[in-house]
Image 1 (spheres, helix red, strand yellow):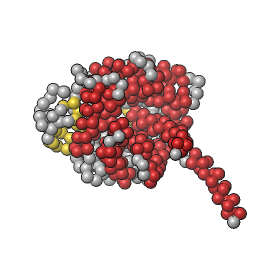
Image 2 (cartoon, one colour):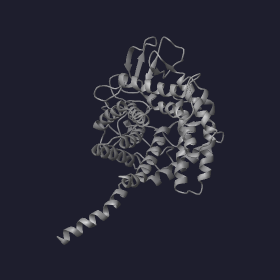
Image 3 (cartoon, rainbow, N blue to C red):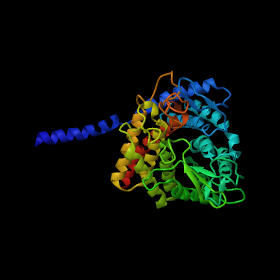
Image 4 (cartoon, rainbow, N blue to C red):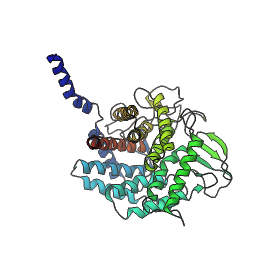
Length: 413
């Protein structure tokens, strides 16, 4: 009995070590990201061409008006945050980089031609304000929310994703738009308003869009459509289809993770059960089809094999969503399920073959897909995407934050 007790005590003593060993190597990821992001910064002294995608050592670039432009400044803010947490001697330099690239996004606060200003401004100015509380950033964020809200059409109950605001012949909404509701909800709590309206109008628009998205996008089994075309006059459905997935009735994996993230956020910020129920539903569908290596194919209905048909960017978004959802559910089994999936995903993305420290790769994440494509040489697949890197950094910071909060939660209980 003494021997058995001794073995049990030894196992208990080793448990924390095994847990630590099972976690992703966050420091390696951030130091690698810092090296690669600094190289891009040095190569672009004018700070007006933003990282986009890469099949090799060089990022293609886009102007500030492109939907992905805010992700590179966002990466710089996440590195700044990590550098300050870990007392890097060059933390100030990282903040200076982040500020310089964020400034290049300023004019997008007036952009009313896209729903993606949430990605563009909240990832840049939003993270900057969160980390520094720079008062000059707040009116820019709030003005962007006003621009985004101007794309809301009451007859449809949703925000127009593509096209001109005045188009009354065509109207579409895409699942990606769930990600931009955070800007509206945040601004509604920080002094933002609609044009000629109130802060509460921003909240109502965001919730109306989320409510209709449950109705329009989420299938009974928890999978999701990508695009829904509506009649702008009465909001009736014209067609449900895909733009980036395999087919109209298939499930584009990154669209599924947009839903996971967006509904988890809406559940967190509103406390409304319908959003939490939807977040659980779409997340459980995602996990039911997730491969053992935690990285989904670019479309869940794909029959293509090989790493070149995976999408690490979808996996990175999923990890962030899972960590948020873990905090919201009360069932211990669900908490454990979502936590394990998040950690498993972050571990997979922080190690080969998906993670690269090599200088011949511009990105830290490989094997991403902007769209489902059957040709691995197509420019939109088997590539690296700046938003994949962004959400990997976000997920790792979120995991560290949750681990830091855990002792305090246990103390309260």
